[in-house]
Image (cartoon, rainbow, N blue to C red; front, side, top):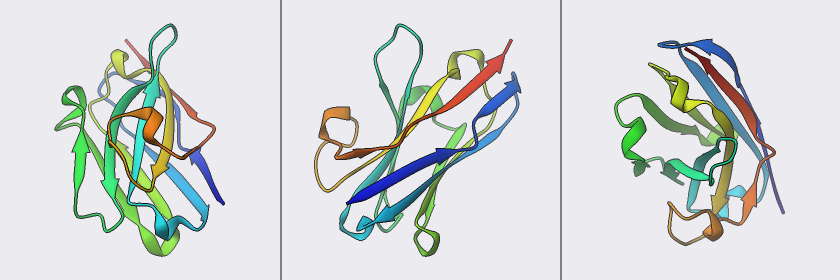
Length: 123
């Protein structure tokens, strides 16, 4: 029904920037929220940011507020995560996910997931 594909990850130095993209196909217009999660080795999957279907509502985890910006371009069926002032603690595999309804910060409430893209920040 829905397919999500992440891209844009890579290796950057501390203080650098990356922009991740999540391209969606299928019946994406029915989903209220699309979000980014990340998972570092040996750690639980962590909520990063969420955006509503219209783009009018966004949420961020405290550790990325002021540094990351989530946005969307519905004409292109794409959600973005602009990451600035990157730190080594941001190193993780980043996943996008979408939900029709549920808790935006809770991974188990999401219906579809992408394959992930690796972000590595050197110290």
